[in-house]
Image (spheres, rainbow, N blue to C red):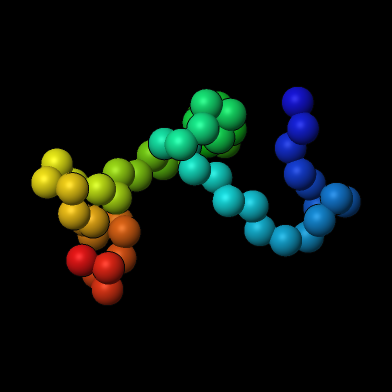
Length: 53
Protein backbone atom coordinates (compact mmCIF):
# COMPACT_ATOMS: atom_id res chain seq x y z
CA UNK A 1 0.00 0.00 0.00
CA UNK A 2 1.52 3.26 -1.10
CA UNK A 3 -0.63 6.36 -0.80
CA UNK A 4 0.91 9.82 -0.95
CA UNK A 5 0.73 11.89 2.20
CA UNK A 6 1.57 15.39 3.29
CA UNK A 7 5.05 14.30 4.37
CA UNK A 8 5.75 13.03 0.84
CA UNK A 9 4.24 15.91 -1.11
CA UNK A 10 1.89 18.74 -0.21
CA UNK A 11 0.34 18.73 -3.72
CA UNK A 12 -3.00 17.46 -4.96
CA UNK A 13 -3.53 13.86 -6.04
CA UNK A 14 -5.69 12.84 -9.00
CA UNK A 15 -8.00 9.91 -8.33
CA UNK A 16 -9.76 8.39 -11.35
CA UNK A 17 -11.96 5.53 -10.07
CA UNK A 18 -13.27 4.69 -13.55
CA UNK A 19 -9.78 4.09 -14.94
CA UNK A 20 -7.93 2.21 -12.23
CA UNK A 21 -8.85 -0.55 -9.76
CA UNK A 22 -6.46 1.01 -7.24
CA UNK A 23 -8.11 4.42 -7.61
CA UNK A 24 -11.56 2.82 -7.26
CA UNK A 25 -10.51 1.15 -4.00
CA UNK A 26 -9.02 4.43 -2.75
CA UNK A 27 -12.18 6.38 -3.65
CA UNK A 28 -14.40 3.84 -1.90
CA UNK A 29 -12.17 3.79 1.19
CA UNK A 30 -12.46 7.56 1.51
CA UNK A 31 -16.15 7.82 0.59
CA UNK A 32 -15.52 9.81 -2.58
CA UNK A 33 -18.46 10.09 -5.01
CA UNK A 34 -18.25 8.13 -8.25
CA UNK A 35 -19.16 10.51 -11.07
CA UNK A 36 -19.95 9.62 -14.65
CA UNK A 37 -18.91 12.40 -17.01
CA UNK A 38 -19.66 10.59 -20.29
CA UNK A 39 -23.30 10.11 -21.29
CA UNK A 40 -24.81 7.12 -23.07
CA UNK A 41 -24.45 8.99 -26.38
CA UNK A 42 -20.70 9.50 -25.84
CA UNK A 43 -20.89 13.22 -25.09
CA UNK A 44 -19.70 14.86 -21.89
CA UNK A 45 -22.45 15.47 -19.37
CA UNK A 46 -22.72 18.15 -16.62
CA UNK A 47 -20.24 16.70 -14.09
CA UNK A 48 -17.60 17.07 -16.82
CA UNK A 49 -18.17 20.82 -16.94
CA UNK A 50 -20.62 22.80 -19.05
CA UNK A 51 -17.82 24.36 -21.08
CA UNK A 52 -16.90 20.90 -22.43
CA UNK A 53 -20.37 20.03 -23.70
